[in-house]
Image 1 (cartoon, rainbow, N blue to C red):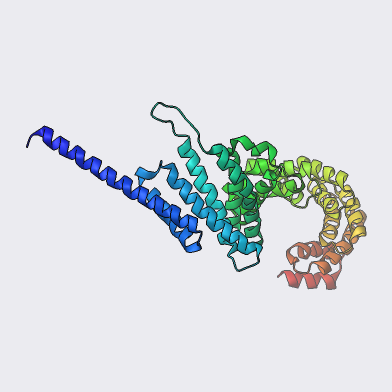
Image 2: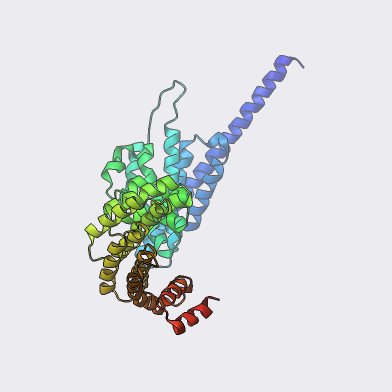
Length: 399
């Protein structure tokens, strides 16, 4: 047998296999279309599965007719599920939303095929306008699905649907709709995607849509909190601090930012920055006990004891049961006493310890578990005031 004959036979065999494959593909497509026309749930499911199976073969991946038949089958299932929900009949809501999402997946995949250049390098987009118009009507249900899973506490699925909703803006299929500038719900979707990721403690996904989420102004303070937490999880101390500063600057009375910002400054011993932040907070709310108390604590660390006592008394007048305000005032009197000469300033020393005593005793009453703080303080006070019985009691407690 000659080489030419062998080549001819091989070519004939290839053509024969291709023809058989093409015939089988066409047969399944026709069968699927017949099933779809019948509009029975089991038939629609079977047709959808047949098309999925065809697309598993890489030789079929560019066959637009398969995608269209697949979409028609899934759309039929969606319509039936939608009708059951409308009639308040039994229907798995999650499955309904999954059908909605699958329609997007199918037509977005078809659009990619539609964008493939032909043999001459020309792109002739055939279905985009029609299909984008169809899906645009279904798109609100992607958002609704996200809120459905959010209420269920299923943050993983909630994130997936909100992300899918947002992702439409970058899909060429929807380029005519310009969702990034026309869809007013995009920032809200980004916020809920950010919130869902935050609840999952997923730092990377929490930060993914942060810029868009911050455009949802009513919830921007919470978004900045989630961003800060994500930075903290990633041990990105510089950006964590920057986010705290931004959050505090924009929302000085929001409970999250202030205490953490003061902690950060204090750990770095940047007390001047901390004091500036406290003053800004007090300017925003001059009756907020937290801010006034924080300033009294900082004044102690800065050695400004007279100011600390005055401010602590102001806080105590507002809330007599705020234990740490009593501790700050008592400590300030004792720190002033430490600066005096024990031999030459005995009278003044005694006066200072007498003034410190009621604050520390009240602190002990309000915070009995904080023995490591009030114990040594009262030890010094009773020792310097020659209060033998009280001194003996504290001495035994500290042993």
